[in-house]
Amino acid sequence: MDRRAFCRLLPAATAAAVGGSFLLPHAARAGDGSIAYTVQRGDTLSGIAHSFGTSVRSLQRANGLRGDLIRTGQVLRVPGGAFLLPVRQASEPMRGGLRTWRYIVAHHSAVDTGNAQIYGDYHKRRGMHNGLAYHFVIGNGSKSGDGEIEMGDRWFRQLHGGHVSSHEVNERGIGICLVGNFENHPPTARQVAALNALVAYLRDLVPNQTRVAVHREIDGRNHTVCPGRYFPTRDFHARHPNEW
Image 1 (cartoon, rainbow, N blue to C red):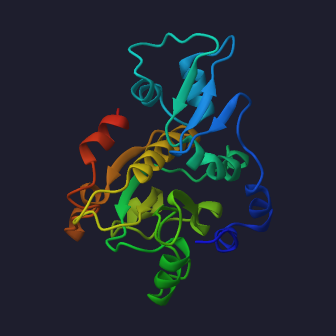
Image 2: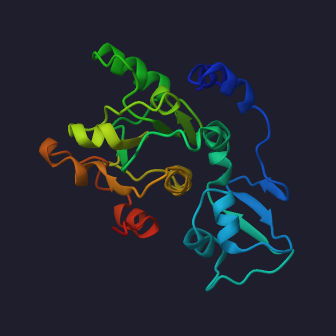
C-alpha cells in the first residue's frame, strides 16, 4: 500500500501526524524493523520495555541478557520497535479512553496478498457496515510493507470486531490479521517481530488484563484452522503468556 492509501485509513488529524518522528531520544531505526536504543543513566530494563511497548522478556531474548542488568552506553535492540511507531503515535492520545478489551486474537488472511484497504473493501461488499473486520493488519510485502502495521477504523473508533463467530470475543476482542496463508508457509520474520511488538504494546495500553489467543483457540464453533499450521503458536504464547 502506498503512503496516501495508508493515510486514508486514519482520521485526518492522526494521518497528518504519522509522518513525523516518534522515536524517543537516543533511539535509531535499524534495517530489520527493530530500534537501537542507547541506555542512559538511570534507565532500567523494565522502564525501556514500557517506553517501547514491549516486554522485559523480549528485550532479554533479543539482546542475549540473562537478567535485568544493563549499563549506561549499552546499545539494546528493540525488536519490532520501528513497526510500532505509527501505532504508538496514534494510540497514546487514546490512553484512558479505550474500550474494555479482554482478548487479543491473531489471525491469518488465508491468502498471500492484500492489505487493510483491500480486505476492508471486501468486508464491506460482504455486508459489514463498519468495513475491515480487524483492528490491525500486518503486511507481508505484497500490497503493504513487510511487517507494516496498518490500523483500521475499528481501532480509531474503538468499535467491536467482526473477526470471529463468537459475539463475546467480537465485542471485547482486538483482531490482528497477518497477511498470508500460513497453512502453506510461515509468516515472515518481520511480521512476527511486528506482531510481538504490537501485542506487548496493546497489553500495556489497555486498562485491564487481556487473554492472548489465536483464532482457532477461541472460536471453536467455527472449526477454523486459522492462523494455520505454520504460524508459530507455541512461541507466540511463550512471549505473551496468559497469567489469569
